[in-house]
Length: 171
Length: 388
Image 1 (tube, each protein chain N blue to C red):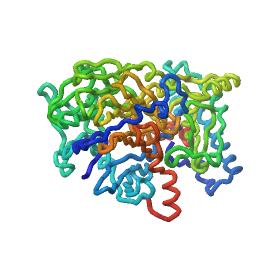
Image 2 (image 1 turned 135 degrees about the vertical axis):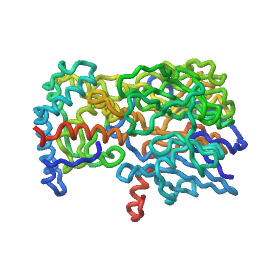
Image 3 (image 1 turned 45 degrees about the horizontal axis):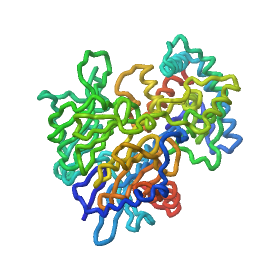
Image 4 (image 1 turned 90 degrees about the vertical axis):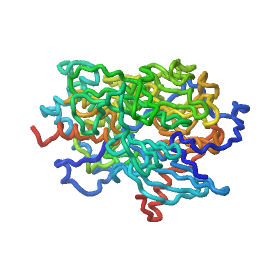
């Protein structure tokens, strides 16, 4: 996921050590949970899950989504983890495998970041192009299919959609 | 002698010794069965430096290898060009280029590229001037997309596939209808051919369509016999031996198409179930099925070909009757990104992965690292060199 800022966490600043990074992650994790009560975010997630699972939006139960999200192990990127390609805010080492999310930049993550990463874990098994494609299909479907974009551009498209729809400043 | 080997570019043919020692020592070759390999899934972000060979210049016994790698989104997706004069032991910065000045296909003075806004262009003077072909189908102009921000209800996208190395104005590509809003449409998607560098097009086959994410419209044309081509059809890898009139599935196609088994997935799934959770999607994920990224033939032997895929590189030595899987050092899906064969040493194969450029002198039986981005980045930062 490419970097984007969040007004909620910009105030923490500084370089986080392991424990403060953990505290930051916990706060943002809680922010992500609260976003499920945000109408726009909930609607966006329902549409995306419906598209991914090939079911109707009405059949999506966000309680199940929350259960899966709560099972994630979200930790600062361990020492020695080579990470992915270029700079990321958070990443999943292997798409569709396990429940671990590694946070590269604890000061830069937002709730939307963690919701995005959940779709890369074993809970959904989507990679960025697949995720971008499903977002595109489940929202407007306007413009070109971002599933055909470069990996970086597909990631940006997905991040932007999560940031727009899962904005904690919106009620 | 200056030989460009970006993709298939064999305008300057060289005499090859063509001694395939790999044939006589199959037991020494690190090429495994395609039936049951295990893989690791790729990471969530797939933007990588992806080093690739740009050209090799041989002059009086000295070689210059020129490579390029992506600088990433923080640097406008520019390409850093490096040169080595000692077979990869040392690399020196050469220049920075934009993407469209990097991804092109060369046949002597004739060049093709997807230029600014992914518009397909050709050059007849080795890149001095670029122009857009006229794109006509049955004498009528084809209304192509006008760029990434084109949001008309329906438009046609062109994806360049390959050119005939012996007659480079004969080119192949896929046309597909991109429907943004509901429209009535009678366009036939498929692989098309043009004999005049892209002005006039006709349908070659509907078997090849650009429908899979992560796969463009890959076609490989044998430089020694351009009637032989390999492509990825909708259900299997296919081959033609008559210039595209008839296609049939390659040998062992079912094993090639099988979804990649993921190491440790069963245990991870069981652990999830123990927690009372069920994943929304389960293996086989769509990205575990075969995705062909590039196809290359050995310049002097149409029986030898390579498929660059999400599942590493498959090689045939017997005209696509059987395949084996080359060992490129990583079991990650989508780790291998590109392949180039040295036209002056046709047993010499360059393979670009996410972070490394590998080279083999025995048609892929054994690889060594020619360039490692992670090491290069560390050393260039240590000596304070600017990489961009």
